[in-house]
Amino acid sequence: MTSAATQLIDFRSDTVTRPDEQMRRAMASAEVGDNVIDVDPTVRELEERAAAVLGMPAALWTPSGTMANLIALSVHLKRGDRFLAPNNAHVLNNELGSAAWLAGGMPEALPHDGGLGRPKPETVAAAIGTRSGPYYALRTTLLCLENTHNAAGGAVIPPHEHAQLLSTARQAGLQVHLDGARVWHAAVALGLPPAALTVGVDSVSACFSKGLGAPAGSVVAGSREFVERARRMRQMLGGGMRQIGVLAAACLVALDRVPDLAAEHEKARRLADGLRELGWQADTPETNIVLAPVADIAVTLESLQAQGVLALPMAGKVRFVLHRDVSPADVDEALRRIKAGGHP
Image 1 (cartoon, helix red, strand yellow):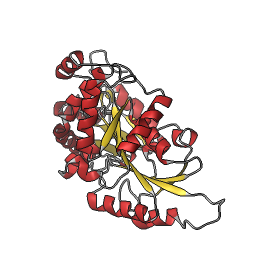
Image 2: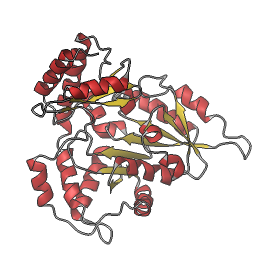
Image 3: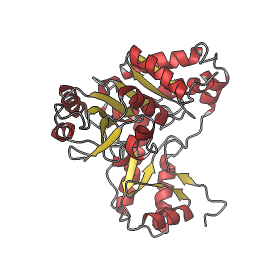
Image 4: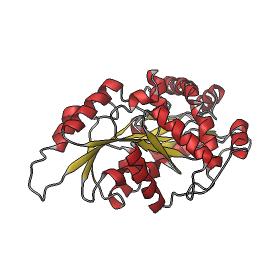
């Protein structure tokens, strides 16, 4: 068991971060209002700024990324419509079937044959099929992309490949939703503004509690008409909250910290390199997520925890996520503990 004196090094997710003093001060002093009856002024500021950063006409605050995605799918899909998404996408594997159960969509997973986290355009075209089939055939109406792709180790979709996938979907009359929970990471990795990675999509979700340090909050963005429909859907799902400027204030601070994510990418490379030196088959990270295949995930995670190192399973591998509350020294200490524990 981990010694009481051993400080845990937590790689489970970049959502385990805690608000620092600057963020807490912003939350404590936030101007607030009833965001259901009227509009909370701090939420309005966040929504306007997030929309501009994401290159969309309007944005809507939501309590979580899962709700943001569900709202988007509920607006885009009619009951019984099929939607396409890369295999192991968050909307397929990590949202408890809400895309089918609540949004009414029929999901179809596409292989990562175009690179980590993405299909080839021709694979998308083949999955869409013909739109002139009989009335009882499934109708494909939506393509969901994920950038970065969590279960593919934080893989990035480059802009030119994004454009090719968008073009394929558009030619077939599909709408496109981008799960951009970690789009900030993709932008930093590519040295581009986030808006360069949302070109042409009908909607995009983005999260402030993954890597940026906010305690909660996401946005879903799109046209003004989309956001008005999304606002009603948010209310149906119980996401209409009152004086949430205290959370939006944290998200505004988080937006200022997007450039800091480069440090998390460097720490991820540092960890992956160290793991490989110890005999692990760790993937080379593009952003802040390191995946490593092991013989027995449960045994490995239990053994890591005994050394005071926390991680989670993902896509049949052990996942380590780097974040602002883990320092380079913590990475080195984790590697020392892993080596002492005889891993893998």
